Image 1 (cartoon, rainbow, N blue to C red):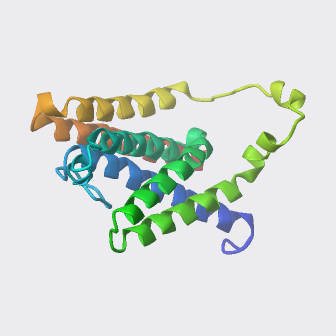
Image 2 (cartoon, rainbow, N blue to C red):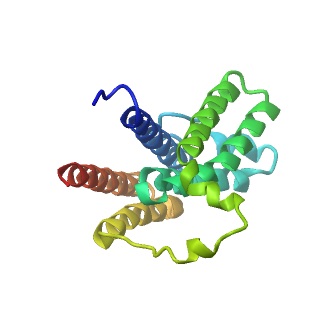
Length: 201
């Protein structure tokens, strides 16, 4: 089977976009909380300081937490579709903020992220199309299954460590970014292990 044609290719593209957007959002949210003292592919890391001029510093913190949570959900395959749904209003919100503040170039970047996220929703339409139907009786019979609760627990543990680090940034001082790196490293390790395990299966 040719990899560059058919379902395998589009599945690969969707997987790359999920990981790319998830990693970008997760690290961007943490970097905003630490004002740049953390790896972050996108910014602005000074968002809290900028929005404080308009008495919106709490809103900037809310955006950072939202990016962390949505990024986590995109990275975890089980929650990726839900994360893609949640990312739509978040990206749209950020887009309106950047346009309103006349930031040069940033609206185009955020708009591109929004388009990539829309692709994820189109790709996963078979999962969300049931939201548009009135007949839900068959859906109630579908059980929720999870084959490895240990992996889920390790994912959540990594997220918990990151949230603890950003929430206690004013009390843990220089140790908080290091703690966030520990959480991110454990998360990436579990992600790599999960991918390797699925490939073996």
